Length: 74
Image (tube, rainbow, N blue to C red; front, side, top):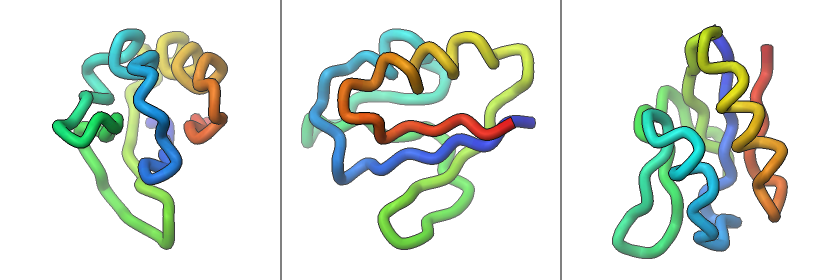
């Protein structure tokens, strides 16, 4: 499993993560992206898990995020 961190409150609502990895992020009514499955919240970080076979799309979301608020940890 991969660990995913997301600083939701710093999201600018560009929708890239939700478009690239819709199984992991969705856009909410407030215009911010939300991890679909949050396993832990620590300070300003929300944590989730990803499957190894989704590594490429998760890395694409991480690298494409214009405000650098997504991290994928192997």
